[in-house]
Image (cartoon, rainbow, N blue to C red; front, side):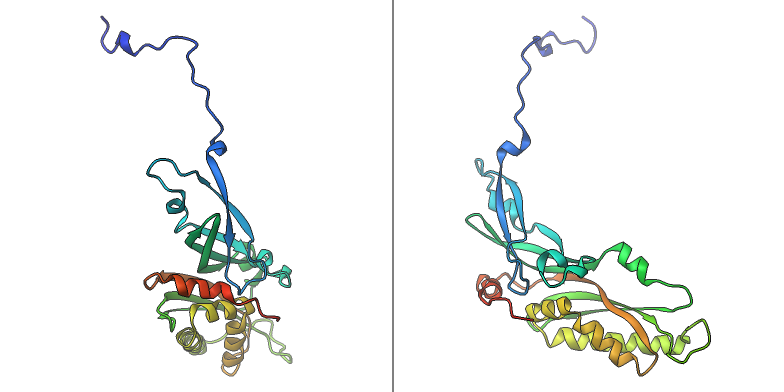
Length: 239
């Protein structure tokens, strides 16, 4: 017999198995976000149904969703460039309860901010919130022309840029350390940290478009269900 030809491996014709669509095995869960946001159930997520020892809830825990701020808040339709990340922490029935996991901005928004004849100043810090979340925060800002300026360019000297970076870091550390994760999320949604940095650094050199570009959660404290549920008890405050 020819090498590699095993007659027992030959399949009969016409015995092809009918494949069911992949989504026939899935069920849909509601994704809940904390009360900081207006739209409390912004999306749904599919997962394979529980089969044997594989539980669907285990597949959902740790799942990360990226939702833009315009979909989360009704009064911030112009903030579609701001991407919020939430991670599933607990599953109850057909509901997934999430917690803030990070933040970013879209690439096209970043490209619209960068202009010629201006300096870009960027700083980042790594610090803990008051409730034990270790995070890394990135801030970005651009030099601004003065109202009575004649010169086309508005470059800041390297010494000034160094002072601006130092001030950015101080402001970010102060805001993070005195806030819980819930309070910090609220500040990030309202852009209050960026406005404060712009005000503080204006004494060194006038800046514009100062925003928190990115936030990453590096380490979380031990999971506590009661603390997670506290995020969902309060109704969103009127802004």
